[in-house]
Image 1 (cartoon, one colour):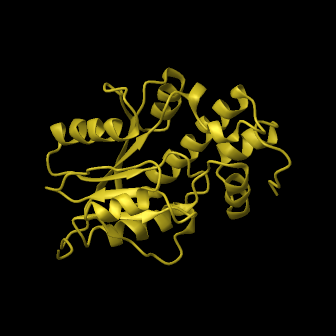
Image 2 (cartoon, rainbow, N blue to C red):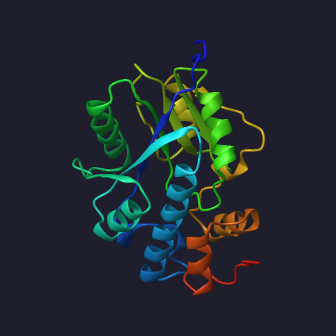
Length: 223
């Protein structure tokens, strides 16, 4: 597929489960309340960085969590209720349908909501690469999952997130993206080790504040 003469203005879809159930793999070192606060902080920093990216037109967060919806709408995100309420992939498919019901030719990219070190410039480079192919995906830092899945106008998103999603997205026909200097777009946070890696990159202000309040696993270097 030839790249568009005019770069697309992307709509990002971010799924977010109810905060009370979020970040369960941090449970060994963080209580339920701390996990919920961290999950919200991750999402706030992800949305803020995404909206600061010049390639991004808007961000649609698919969630049924009222607290998250209010906080993320205040940052400029559009909230799409998770009508299917049946898991990550149905939420993304529903969000894609909602966006294209308004803008049928939208370029879409599903982006994880747990990228607290996300850099707008790095996201822009990934989306520039994604614009060269009908569907594309970016593997996570661990190399087995996915942090971004894109679909150009006229293409279905067809998400296959979950266990070993890198292999499943490749099998679905999506092109894997290899973008140098895009580590912040790959560094999602599921475990304490992931959080330490994100902190080493430099997390956004909401996550930094949550960590400074003592919300989350310890010890983690926030310097």
